[in-house]
Length: 167
Image (tube, rainbow, N blue to C red; front, side, top):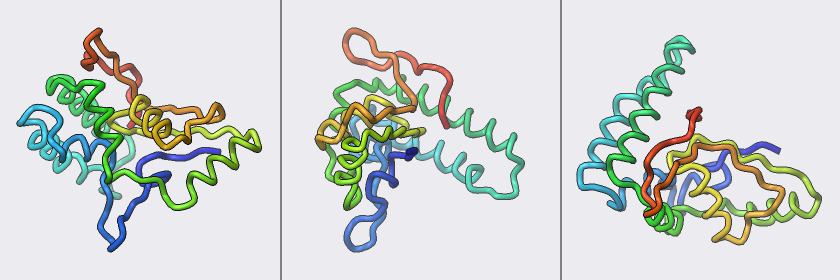
């Protein structure tokens, strides 16, 4: 079984129809990092999201732009002093919730010994996804995460991103 994380295992919409946040949006919008991080992150989004959703753009050009976007965003996260504690706070946000029935689905997969690969380009990567699932008591041995992964220093600050970047 293969799944994405943000807005696939988690809810895409809150009651009332408002779109929910992704893990990276929680980090940005709840001001965990430097004061200039949200503005710079939104500028990157504004520029690159238009490219991402342009159906007329050749695949190779779009792929190169997405690689550039994620590289710049990870550099921004590192420069903004991303810490493991920030990731821990973000995954506890009320804005991130499993879709209805997801817990039962994950338990079913575990009980039937069906592997689940969560493949995600999440800006907060493996650490955030695994921590979120652990906090929900849903991180089982049959779940394998393929996502971006930070290198942390001894004080818990992100100092690099492992290659290759998933986007």
